[in-house]
Length: 452
Image 1 (tube, rainbow, N blue to C red):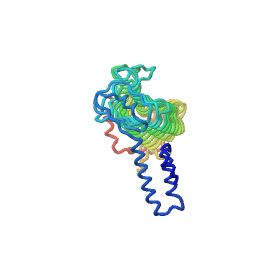
Image 2 (image 1 turned 45 degrees about the vertical axis):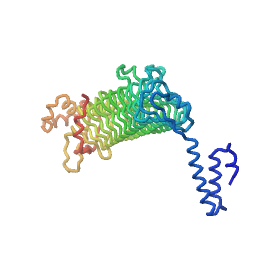
Image 3 (image 1 turned 30 degrees about the horizontal axis):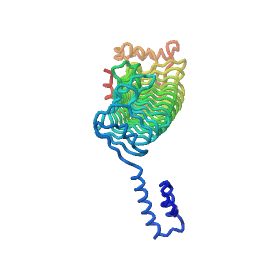
Image 4 (image 1 turned 45 degrees about the horizontal axis):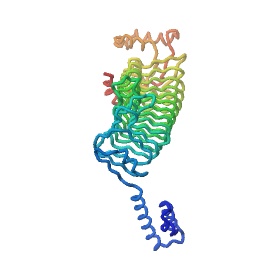
């Protein structure tokens, strides 16, 4: 073993640890030597940790900024419950932890906390009262470029312009925060709850966001995970652009203008989300390719899905129920695999704008609550294809009382005539395997999810 490691105080502890590990693993080492050396290694690791990590406690009335300035990299600054006015700048790796949720107020100016270095954790605070300058991007927590591995968790960020502004970082974690904006401002004057720009590997998990402009705004940010967030009373629950290879799952967007908006993206997984009561759309898929959209529930929105310029995607096992328009599809949205979805009691099942038919349900079909065909062989699949834009559908939605006559010879004759004369038929979504029973057994409980 290199004895100089211990004799020279200028040696780094990591080098000493390496010397000990070499002694442990050297082929000539005997068992009688290994055990004492191992004990020495553990003692060194313990003493190193205690020597290089220290706790600083800020009592009510004291300065958090002074404690941060005094702390060394890797230290913990504990802040007791109280009201602390001012602006914090963190320029070294440390844990800033609140005890019983102390309040940090920016007094309506600038950023409340500004992070300038990697490996910072902010945990357990009420962070409030940033400035309102959109040009300066005032935020409750502003994470500067290069501040990789920042963790922001268990905080309440209230009455800030941007809850968090996060730019050009890797592996940021935003977990279990409550975020509300400056709700007395008009929507265009507010910032976003969480702003991600040019990030990689972000994890946004378990946050509750309301009364900002958009809940989560994502731009040029890849390999991210968005899970278990709630976004409500916003313009868009999420506004999501030019970001690839991301996962959006188990989120709930409700009572917004728009729920989830995915635009100019590729390789997304969008699953197990709920979007309800949004005045415009539940889930927007605009200029999206090579993505999977599955097991989502869109209920009581203006449009359940708004699909625009979407190609080579898979939409499967979604419940689309009680929307004014179930799916609005246009602008060359073709070559998508659409299977196993339930479209139930939407005022207009499909609004389709195109020059030719698009075939869905090629493998196992979808369920359409307004399908009036028969299943003579009792195999669970309608004998005739479903066409979303036929004349009878338009008449039944415009004049609901006609549904009383759906099985009458007159309505059947009208449907037959429309199918035989192309001049009476518009291009349509055609499902060649319409299912007779919904895939979702609990669909009825979602009929009550409307915007109030």
